Length: 180
Image 1 (cartoon, rainbow, N blue to C red):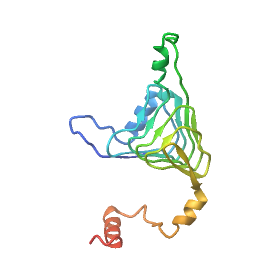
Image 2 (cartoon, rainbow, N blue to C red; image 1 turned 90 degrees about the vertical axis):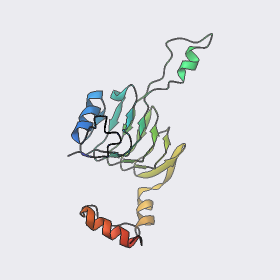
Image 3 (cartoon, one colour; image 1 turned 120 degrees about the vertical axis):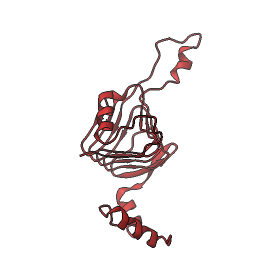
């Protein structure tokens, strides 16, 4: 089962939904596991010119405006130097583990592996490998804490309401945050 949350931003453009988005990314060559979610309320996830170099593990959620960059186009500068070689280029793979969350507007660069059970904070620039079971964020992205430390720190903040109907959840949240 694939979950995709999509809010169209332009009625003149065709909007892909649900499995259509997953199928489209797979046609581009992205290796996508089972139960992967793409959250796209603003604009789609960006897979650079080599999407077939990207793999995303089972049960992973990718938020909106995430860019998977599999090449270093800055090599154009090297190619244009007097002693440069016109064939110079850098490519690399991106592997996202199982049960991960990639926050909105993050950028993942070539030759990066993100471990299993890892959360990447919004707006991060991931330019190095990130291990299993951690929270990492920033520019450049670095490990902030372990997954267990995060759970312990936020245990009083957790709400258990993922499966609640929309109106019930809305009423609870408005009341809980004094917005009524």
